[in-house]
Image (cartoon, rainbow, N blue to C red; front, side, top):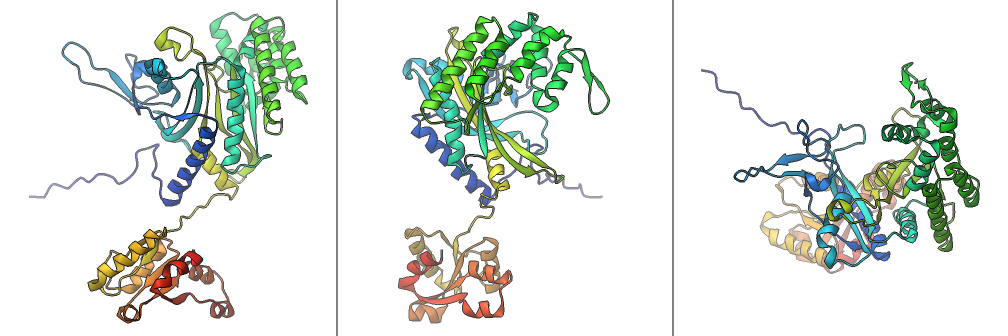
Length: 490
């Protein structure tokens, strides 16, 4: 009788997830530390909230009959008697948990409450190239003030963070717009149907892709796309579409011109005029702090998230070119965004609580630095203390401990020491800068041999015979001088 075949699990990550190793983990931690330091310098306090929230608290993803977990990874707890179990979900972002935290602890928190948060978030969406279901967000928010100065600070914070992680001026721009101005533009069109207004918003969001002419067509009767398919338009008249076009093309040569164009675009709308006033105050606060248009600009073309935000919105964009997977040049694009969201906490309290914040895409920033050649892609491993005599393992471990006490990253080889060549291969695979070798003869004389693996690697990559002779890849060093020798080598 044939034996049942053993079914083994597949050794692969779930679709839309990935593993991170060595240099990637180190580089991301260093970036998070730099961003956290900027946030702390601005006076924000750290917050770690639960990775799991009730689906009800997440708000946008209330369970429905057919797809209770749409957009999030969700599950239902077991029922308790006749009471059905709560729907729980992995957090979709860090903002919805902040609203819950503030509503829950508002009597114990200062007003305004300024917090930053960093951590993984999960989205149950179709993955794609560079798009994963788990990624790191890095947020800063101010809850409890409607001051435009708080919005200006968010734009400034974006600029400061980008420079702190290694993106120089000239390689980025932070762009600022306002949902209130857009509300004024919608009012100026005379369109009061909510569904039609939503169609206008979706069309505005395509401005970067189809340009002014394409938006005009989509606001009107429609247009034919690149594939030849016809896309129905919103059905606005030319007169109704004109305020939208004026809004999208209102960026001028300077702040004063942009503001004047926006005032013309909103016409007689009171809400729109308030939005323009708000942008004017933000621009004045930024100018007083020395943030010029080379770093932060008013730009009506910023339309991302306008359906979610209630006031100013911000987007940080990297302006340098990279080469895509097909070898074509393109701009790197957005790495951070945010804005004012005054209605989120109100869901819990019933009272309006103003709030503004930003979210920075850490993985996008890491990819940008790598594209510019400013990211170390290979982590340096520890110094490896090799084992020549397994009966002296305690001595090797004591030697390693001495190096660690001096702040030198080190480890003793713990594999089978029989084949010394395998120990050096292990050190090479760890990308170790050096190997420490001590046999019984060296131990009797109080010395070790230090093999400079980093130098050996460089010399092997094209060195001449003369260069080989002029460098010592292995040096005898007194044990008492080992720490100083390694410090110089490293």
